[in-house]
Length: 279
Ligand SMILES: NC(=O)c1ccc[n+]([C@@H]2O[C@H](COP(=O)([O-])OP(=O)(O)OC[C@H]3O[C@@H](n4cnc5c(N)ncnc54)[C@H](OP(=O)(O)O)[C@@H]3O)[C@@H](O)[C@H]2O)c1
Image (cartoon, rainbow, N blue to C red; front, side):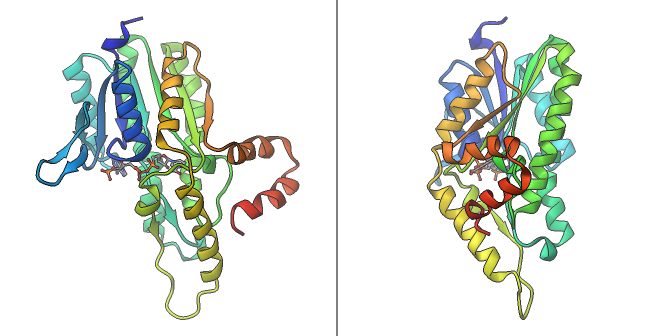
């Protein structure tokens, strides 16, 4: 096992929220951290422009094949290794399923699912060549429990869950681990970055329900845990010699839903979940 100081981690979505907290935290834990995003870094001072906070910023759009290929290969070439990836880039889409244009639904899945897939595909050859690695996929409690009026967000994270589960079998023989991290509500820019489906002209039969459910979700996010909590969970997974396949982070009252869904008859679970989902 190489010395911790030499280990290289690429984090996507590092310009804000969970990715940023993870980049800062791992940087302090003797990892060499490359933080990727479309902005490339954290804007600390408009006069200075966009900079990272101690780690190396990288401009990389996970929606773009070429950008990801160039970014990941560049990291491996510059550092001579790539030990871990934290696929954190993502955003949310709110609106009724019936009213969501397919292009917007596709864009949601493009970043949250295909974005992670692109980064993993680009990273795997480098990890295999070195005989090991760790892929951390930032999913969501919404990747286990469907969230009304965020159906395409949930769909993107459900896809990530199935993908990560299957991928783990394929890459284990090469010493590569896969961990799905499932946060509940976390206080980040996620709430302000959320895209909202435009309501139709005239009568909108969903208006009241969308507004109630999304309003509740936004309040819960504002009262969510600190992104540092998620960073510590991710760091713990990366440190572990036997990392768990799935690990959740957030308030106990939210994480209990994961257990309830697994254990309860579905009808009972659905009835109990409705209130907390704002429907
Ligand atoms: N906050 C929560 O309550 C919560 C709960 C469960 C799961 N999550 C998940 O946690 C992850 C991080 O979310 P967050 O809460 O930290 O949100 P955030 O504060 O809005 O950060 C999102 C990050 O993703 C980056 N990003 C978005 N689109 C990108 C693209 N096409 N290419 C590269 N980077 C992109 C953003 O950077 P640029 O804009 O600079 O590209 C930003 O750095 C997401 O996958 C989210 O689904 C969040």
